[in-house]
Structure formats: C-alpha cells, structure tokens
Image 1 (cartoon, rainbow, N blue to C red):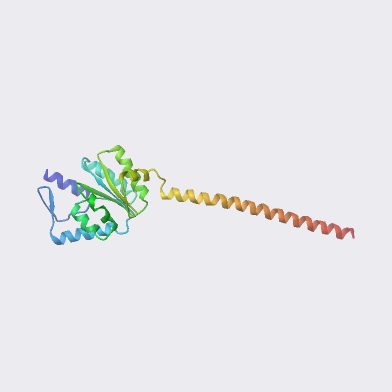
Image 2: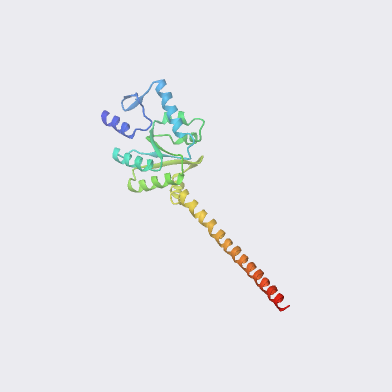
Length: 205
C-alpha cells in the first residue's frame, strides 16, 4: 500500500513533495520544503483565468494520466494538492475565495487561457468517468458552481466566437462596400453621359 501511494503521487506529479516523507499515508514536510511548495504553486496560479476543484477519489493512475494529457493539450495544468498547502498558496489571491471547498482529496485544474476549454474537457471526461466530481470553479475571479461550469462547456470557444464576430463584421462591411461601389459607378455613369452630351452639343455648333 505504501508503494502504491508513492507511485500514485509520483505519477500524477502534481505539487511535488520532492523530499517529503510519508507517515501513515500523510506527507510530512519541514518548514523549508513547505515554503518551497507554496512558492512553486504561487507561480503556477499567477495570472490564471480559471480554476476548477475536483474530487478525484475513484480514479486510477491511468485515468488520471488520461485526464492530465487531455488538459495539457490545451495548456491546462492539473495538480493534486494538499489542502493546507493550497490554502497557504491562495492567500492574497482570487483563489482564496475557494477556501471553504478545500476539503477531502482535492485536485485543481488551472487555466491561463480560455475558460471554456477547461469546462469542456472536464465535462466530457465526467461523461466517460463519472467518478470524477467537479466541486466548484473560479472563472475570471467569480466563484462558479458545477451547473454553471456545465453550461459554460456548451459555449463556443473564444476562437470560434472571434471568427463568428469577424464574419459578422465583414459581411456588413462587404455589403457597404458594394453599395458605395454601386453608387460610385452610377455617379461615373452620369458624369460620362454629361460629357458625351456636351461633346454632342459642341459638334452641332
């Protein structure tokens, strides 16, 4: 059991307790190691756009690694954390708003990009592996319950929205350009007709 626990945490490799010892299944770290862990995690959460806390008990190593790989494809990190450590790291940051949720086995997904991608990946994974429980999220500084995260997952990604917006802008612009061009052509036509009329008048004189 001891080896399995070490293997589980080393494979997940999240909030690495580099030289920590384990006693009765719990990590024991000295003051310097604790400070290093907090500093490392502070760097990971700096400037984050969204974070989601999950309850991962029931998932095996392979399933956890599958989730981590999928998240990593979108540059999202996934960390198994010790609640006391993450509370220390969260002090003075928006993440402190989730302090009441740091209970039980906790893993946190952190995104510095589009929150929709994070919500989509977790929602899709839960459909396949319902053992993963989404506890709560923090999206752009706002505490977000699971049902809102599920709704967020149904939205188009930022890239798709930008493409749709650009397309919406281009369509009226192209229509406007067509109207302007048509008007210019009419003006040119009238001017040319007037020139031709004057030329004919000069010939008659």
